[in-house]
Image (cartoon, rainbow, N blue to C red; front, side, top):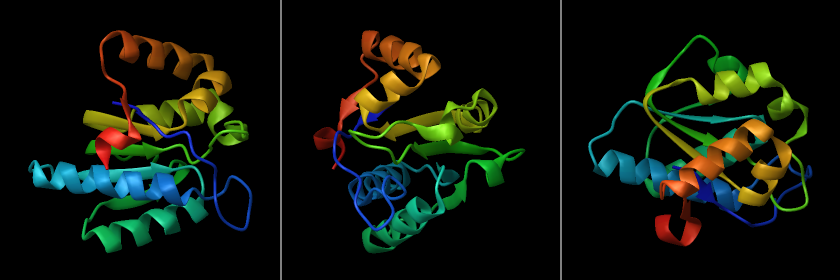
Length: 149
């Protein structure tokens, strides 16, 4: 279920951290916990985003494994929430443009995968994600951030 988050990235290093997206991720994790899902991992391509996510999880009173995509290789979780971090005006960058890293990011969930990011950036940045988002939109599997928070 991708969450379309069309907001600018905040913070010191451009596109390394997205506080609004971190809050959305925390909200998703909290709702998953309320639904009884306990094995949740949050993955992001940037360590600065992981710090923002940990902080947002703490403020929300939610808990999850938090890891970079690369460090989570070889592991899995029942539910993975993937924070793409990038927002309007920024591309996916080398990290997620690499098909091998993208494969790791998209294949770590055993039961449920939640993609959180700016739809426009994701669709423009990766043909694979563009096809995935198109299919999910056709099936009603995309929601806006306002529907999550």
